[in-house]
Amino acid sequence: MALNVGQVQGLPRNPRFIRDERFEALKKSIASSQDILQLRPLIVFPYKSSFVVVCGNMRLRAMQELGFDSAPVLVLPEEITGSKLREIAIKDNLSFGSDDFEALANEWDMDELNAWGFEMFSSDEEEKEEVKEDDSAEVSDETKISVSVRNEDLDEVLSYLIDRGCQCVVKKKKR
Image 1 (tube, rainbow, N blue to C red):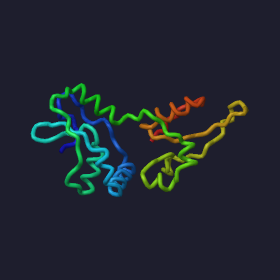
Image 2: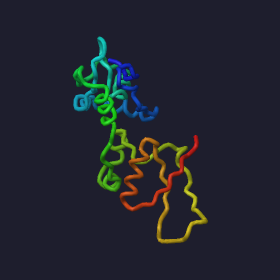
Image 3: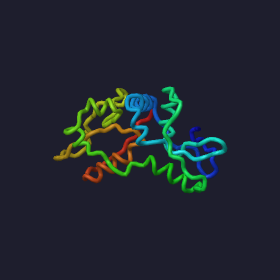
Image 4: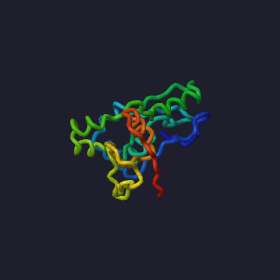
């Protein structure tokens, strides 16, 4: 089995990436709950004498680093078109729902969520900045907050806030 590096005609290389700390969390999650892999197998496409991963590239990398010698898979039929492979690869990574942060904060155990790799807020110290009050802003009954968000989560978080009537200003941090 091979990671998708664009070797299948009509299927560009995997556009997803994972940061080191999130990759370590994924490995920890897989190591502690291997049974979940049976519920969410890799989706592969037959290619030459092997298979190319269409969905689950990060899980495969994690399993390889953990020393797995096999993985549960669903094999797509050879007659699937490149267009359909692209659609499957992208749709597998979409998150159509949003998290109810209030329910998570009030009804779920934060230690469990953190242990399972769920990140409600960034814990990276360099991203925690002191919130400075904008002296030029009008005084009103509104509250301003500053939130640090991973780039890949920005659209989802913005949608969540805008759906709840928040006015949002995005300031990208230079690194």
